[in-house]
Image 1 (spheres, rainbow, N blue to C red):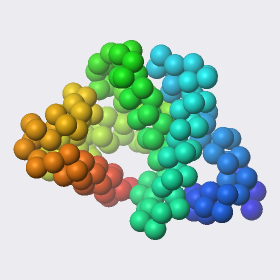
Image 2 (image 1 turned 180 degrees about the vertical axis):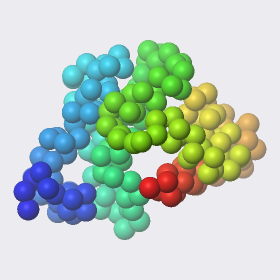
Image 3 (image 1 turned 30 degrees about the horizontal axis):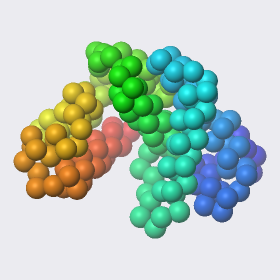
Length: 183
């Protein structure tokens, strides 16, 4: 199969078997959107290369595990890892300024190349309606208010950090399922 027609599953299998073709695919098809996102968000090409390398490391740690289950496209998964790593780096270096949610939605539209009849914000609103109120509050605190997991643990009354992280994961899965049901 040609490099242009390789499926996500084949690419993941290639990563598991350390096939160079899989790495070529990552750089050819997934790196450009990560680079664009980082360069337009206070970063450089060198920053993008660093973040993409970190993303590949995360991917290589997760893919071979028995419990790894890709619930989105590989492109979405890679972009999510990369953007989270970059936004964390910006927060840690105090370069990130809180912006309106609509600006971040625009970046997701640009870099994910989402082709929808409805605007991304309408789709996001539909997904948002599929999750519970508790999850809405938790995800808002973590991703919009940028509260760390220790703060969330205390504010939401979780017994420990692990329970808070577990609930965050469950809420993200709830949102992913909601998004899948829209398709």
